Length: 212
Length: 310
Ligand code: SF4
Ligand code: SF4
Image (cartoon, rainbow over all chains, first blue to last red):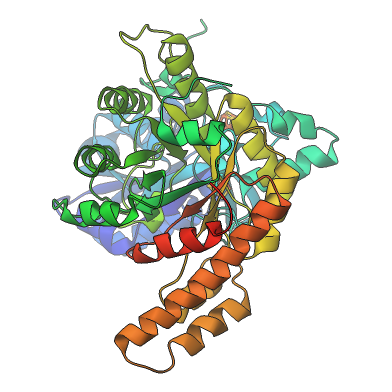
């Protein structure tokens, strides 16, 4: 899931200062689960904006142009008459909305990471979409994300008592977790292997996937 | 055994007990400080390490400082290179530059994380990790090719070392990591500072390294520094006797008396530690970090070696 966080209300209001009529678009999927762009947050934002809010809708998945077309069609006149759209969804959704409507889009959320949900309000970054998954070599734990330095042959010298230097020895060191997981699976030999340099060109340019 | 390009590597290959020092360039354009420190170290160490943006602070370049120390003082250097601040292009170009300028030893460091440094908004690079860096240096030195196999004009004459941490807990994870770096082609190991001789002994014995291991020590100029390390740097234990020794040495007397007494505590403590390591393990040498307390180095090395040969 894409994890988002609401921008501070004052910051959102400031970005909307120059706009008279604002249409609010929420997200029925990830941002609803994060409680940042669901019905409740869209209504709350409409209340805060008062007269400025000219309309609102929660689109099932605003990152999908087909769903946008379907869910925005009944609002097309109001949107056409608006000055800007406030997007309560991830950056991908916000851009799709701009692309589809050609309107000024103001992001109401900060997009944080691809994450795992423990329970509502507790999310953990687990994947950085690196383009070449290697977690079968690392006990199912991603070092790209969970090692603060993204090392492939850790731990670094900053590990102390199994904790990570970055952030002051609070989080577990990913490489100690990886060791323990592999040890439990009887695969310590895998830990000892040297993992080769990564091909960063996979992420060096904007990615597109066209299979058809 | 690989061919030795540097005096440091020659001494290790000859089985001599080797001392190295350490110099930290600061956020400055002045070179006097590092030159003075290098002069103090010169007759007591085979080579001195030159740090590269330690604790993620942006300081004068380790490469420039290493070159100047070798040129103006005639002390061989071990130039630190962190993989935190440079991608592979910049690392390759610095290694070529280092070799061209006559620097013969490099020590690869992961580098403390940027968020704890003096420009915490910096992008942490880590394009390669230290193990992969060692592999890259092997290609450059042994085969004359860069990381992607492109040929290099002229020989790259460098030795590459890595860091190990005897204080690490769990130690077995650290040992696996250091072994990996040796497998990748590291030629020497210098360790994180150790005060507890038992930790150093255990590290050397359990690692049973095929390449020389230099144990890092850090003589403290006051008990406050020792207490800071004991309390604020996770994982490093500092024996109480040592802290107490420094404390009572600093308790009375005038300035120079106190300095003498502190020196005596350090000389006694570390020469005993060094002798114990030499007697009981295959420790190849000692890396002495000083951070401004360079005057202690000769005193410790002299005492540690009395009655023995290098
Ligand atoms: S290695 Fe990590 S970042 Fe890459 S795809 Fe797998 S989980 Fe995602
Ligand atoms: S302490 Fe562990 S998780 Fe943190 S940066 Fe170092 S290797 Fe990575």
